[in-house]
Image 1: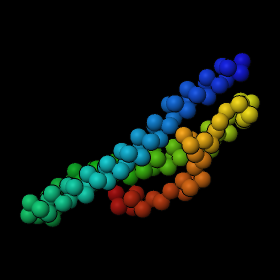
Image 2 (image 1 turned 60 degrees about the vertical axis):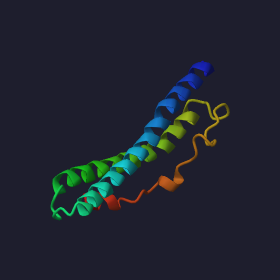
Image 3 (image 1 turned 45 degrees about the horizontal axis):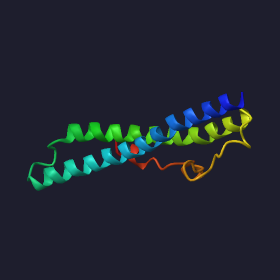
Image 4 (image 1 turned 30 degrees about the horizontal axis):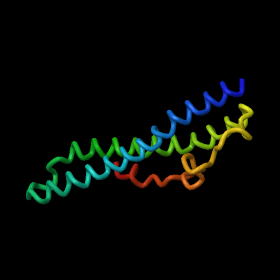
Length: 116
């Protein structure tokens, strides 16, 4: 029974951590893409409105990625609480280097959402 619960906890961890990491990376890449599109337009000497529609679409996507990032960060302490509920608190190494607590992400800034 304990081994089954430990296996379940590990499988959830193994699915969750890459999801959280990859969402962070995608949000960064979307923001970098917006900057590159604006630089390319300016470097090419194109009018200010050139590319505005796709930039707006990518900005909206970036805002959604940052919102997803916030949701995943909010899920982290709830997932940690499940460890105790499953009776694994003494057996599961939660809070190690691979899975640090997310208190610093409790209230992620939402400034990017205002730009979208």
